[in-house]
Image 1 (cartoon, rainbow, N blue to C red):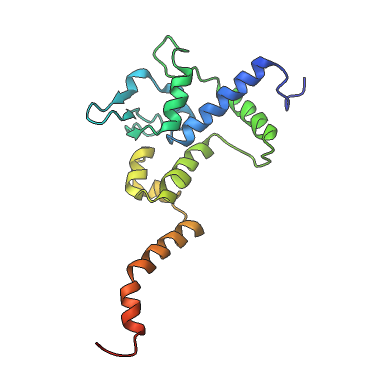
Image 2: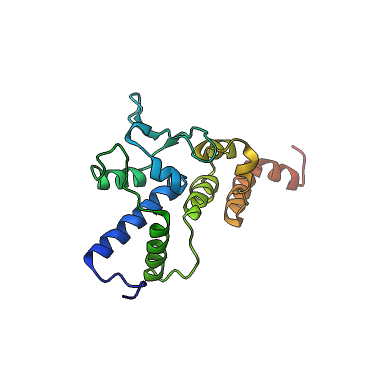
Length: 186
């Protein structure tokens, strides 16, 4: 059997499940082991606004994270609700199985880049949060880092983000620019 092919309907279902777990991590910042350990009791609804949060403790640091669930992870949870009867949110397979299936999914999608599970967490930090203007202190809290220096590793400034910020600055300075470039004092 060729490991790069998804030859049976069961393989397709498993690949879709692993893809969805990866996306869940990309929109929550959870590490693989924290996803595996995620339990129903870690899911909390805010009675004031109806938002849904996860409050797991990171296995690596013991720090409690506070992640508000965006629509994509909420839909993924809804899709797989009821698969576990032991209190876990998802029946997460062993890491090596997830890694192999994820690699197969990437090949099927013609993505030739080597993908690791940690890249989902990195995507949450950089693409979902920092590139959309979330302050690094908030990203640090979402990721469950003990100190902000751990989060700063993710905080590479992208040209796109820098360009957006410079456009905002340019708009704010428009009045000053007009004053400085005017030829008369009024």
